[in-house]
Amino acid sequence: MNNSGEYLSDTDRQVFFIANHLILGMTICLLGIVGNCLSITVFLKQGLRMSVNLSLFAMSVSDLIGLIFQVWHNFCLNPYLELADLPVDFLTVQILTAGSPNIAMTRITCWITMYITAERCLSVLLPLRIRNIVTFKRTVVILLFCYSINLSFYLPVYSASSLGWRFYPSLNKTMFAFIENNRTLMVSLLMNVSHFYLSVIAFICNFIFTAILVVSLKKKSEWRRSATFVGDQNEALTRRDKKTVTMVITVAAILIVCYSPGVTSCFVEIFVPDFAIYAKQKNVYNVIWSFCFLFHSVNASINVIVYYRTSSKYRTTLNKILFDLNIVKT
Figure 1 (cartoon, rainbow, N blue to C red):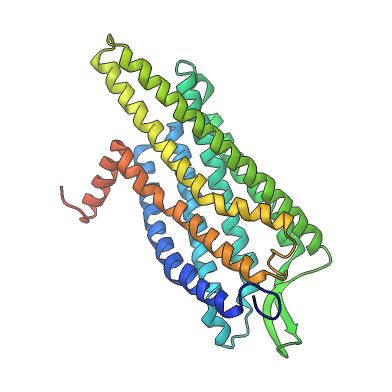
Figure 2 (cartoon, rainbow, N blue to C red):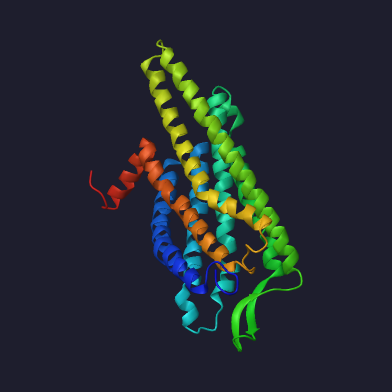
């Protein structure tokens, strides 16, 4: 702890920013952008009439957009920009141009994953009625709702705040920065509350639905092993359904692990006033969230590997696309 009572100094924060944002973060984001572009191409080629394909396509789009914003976010948090004496306060500019849009996209991914796990739960628990319950039109409406509910809470942020020229007395210079007005505090409170509830609701639901899937899949597997009269065709169908459920469980489990630090930070921010972006422990706050953003980038980037390893249909389509581009040989 230094003389000001902070657990981490500005130098410590800069070291973590270089590691998490410039080195690891940038590498993961660039790989994730390529991976999600491939996934979007695969799902478009396979067609979006299937509920799972449409949902995974929508999630790949949100992951792609989120990673693009995260690249700009990583750039803005480059400690070397502070030493360049540029007339831009990147640490505040990123709030509106990178941080907020990225968090919106990560929440959308979380909500879409929640819907996918819920849909798979119904397919396991009600296999004969699932096609009547989960239709293409209903899936479109639900996915649009996932996007709209998460994006709508950011409208007040952009109406109450803006970017412009701001004078810094301590530096005796004017910089292009984030400008607040008399509504910013109220909007900030609204944002924190909405972010907390929307994130926690999706996180808890993902955890519950994933647990139900794991238990249901285990029970179904035990029952099918005991049903020796099942024919080869039905057995093949069982294996295909099992692979889909396994893929969904893996995607949801990775999301739960990667989003746990962010959700935990939301709880800490509520009960520890010093843990905030402009509070006493701002350096600790920024360092912790640098890890949270890093985990978010991992979650948005790793799904292409999960799809490739768990879905033979995805693997076949992707190999064909890469072969047509002369990237791989059959």
